[in-house]
Length: 271
Ligand SMILES: Nc1ncnc2c1ncn2[C@@H]1O[C@H](COP(=O)(O)OP(=O)(O)OP(=O)(O)O)[C@@H](O)[C@H]1O
Image 1 (spheres, rainbow, N blue to C red):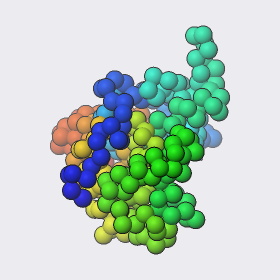
Image 2 (image 1 turned 180 degrees about the vertical axis):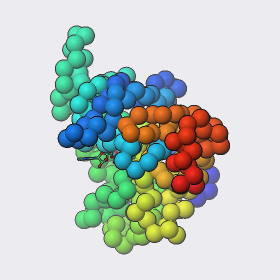
Image 3 (image 1 turned 180 degrees about the horizontal axis):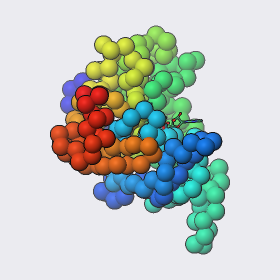
Image 4 (image 1 turned 90 degrees about the horizontal axis):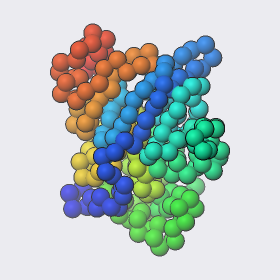
C-alpha cells in the first residue's frame, strides 16, 4: 500500500483532541470466585496507541470485552469520550445504563477480533457497508464511498465483490479492520488480531495496522503477543499481572529497562 492510499484523518477519526477518551475507575470483574480485574484504574488519551501486555489470564481481553459491553463490571465505572458506558448520569446520580444509552456510547468503539467474525453470506463490500447504513443511517452511496476508501487503505480494492471464504485469513482480517473503521470509531480495539493467522499472513495485517497507526489519529487499544509490533506502534505499554497494571511507560522503557521483575520475566519468555 502506498502512503498516498491512506485516507485523510477526517475519514478515519473525526474527534481527536488529546483529551481523555477512556477511563476505568476502580473496575472489578469476577468470574465465579476468580477476580480477573481487581479495582483497576487506567486512562487512555485520545489519539494514543496503547498496548496491553502480560501473561495469559492476566485480564487483557476482559478489558476489551468490557469496553464492547459484551460483559459488565461487578464494581467500578467505565467512561468513553466523557460518557459513562456502564451507567447513565441522571441528575448527578448514577443508574445502570439502558440499552439505548449503551448503543450510543458503543458507536464510538470499533473492535477487531482474533476470529475475523465477518458475515459469511455477504460480499466484502456489504460486510463493510452494513453497519454504517443501518446503525449510522448512511445512504448506500455514502457507505460504499467510505468502504472503497477503506478497501484501498487495507489494500483490498480488487476484492470488494468476493465472499469472505474466497479470501485468505489475512485478507479476511483486513476486511474486518476496514469494517471496524467504517463506523469511524473514536477507538479501535485490537484483540490478538494475528493469532489465528498462518505465519506468512501475519506481516500483511500488521503492516496495514502500522500504516493506520502512523497515518491517522485514531486511538488504539491493543492486546498482542507481537512485541515488535507493540514496540513500533505504541505510545504507551501497560504491563498487566493478575488483573492489575504493575507498570506502564513508553515501549523503549518497558522493553529495554522495565522496573518490575515480573515484567522482565514475562519479556524474557516472549521476546
Ligand atoms: N466468560 C468467562 N467465564 C469464566 N472465566 C472467564 C471468562 N472470560 C475470561 N475468564 C477468565 O478470566 C481470566 C482472564 O482472561 P482474559 O481472557 O482476560 O486474559 P488475557 O490476559 O487476555 O489472556 P490471554 O493472553 O491468554 O488471552 C482467565 O483466567 C480466564 O479463564
